Length: 211
Ligand code: BEZ
Image 1: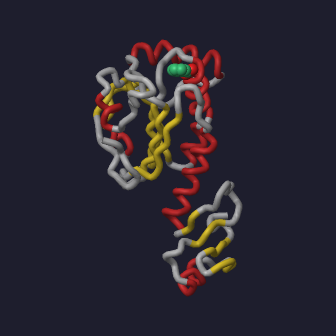
Image 2: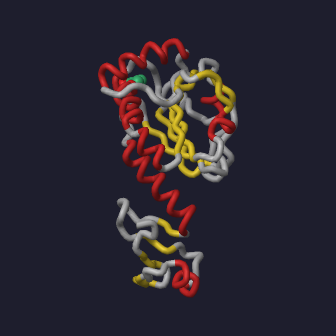
């Protein structure tokens, strides 16, 4: 059964490179990113895990905990970590889950049998502090993900959570944002002291509130 936006992210216990975790307990009050990769000791995955390790300060700044997952063993994850550090110039600095029994993959629908019967695809779930799924995406094994885009999504989600704004197409941090349609003009005036521009009654923009 697919995990959909707004669902509570399924809880689980798992063996990881940082010991056993209970997922919800481990998340605590943080935001979370759970992402799967197909297989240890493969080229695209090696570059992805190095990229995520390098972005750790950016995740920390946003109060986001990150965990990776594949169906390989913790022993393999730990052996592979040496290659990641050697080739990508960044040591693994977040837990990599071992899902040998494929129970977590099944919970999150990370195995797509028509793509590959046994390996996880490149799934990403962004989870809010309320443990609800805020974003999911799926990439094929042959395409490495753009983790800067995932950070951009986290920025957008956190703006929505904190300021009642949405972000337009191709929005980048620092650019104008959109006043959510559920807010009346009168409430928008109170909420956004920098003012807002009414392009159409349903399209109102305002400077990014936390800048
Ligand atoms: C890779 O990470 O390069 C990869 C993994 C599984 C299948 C194909 C490519």
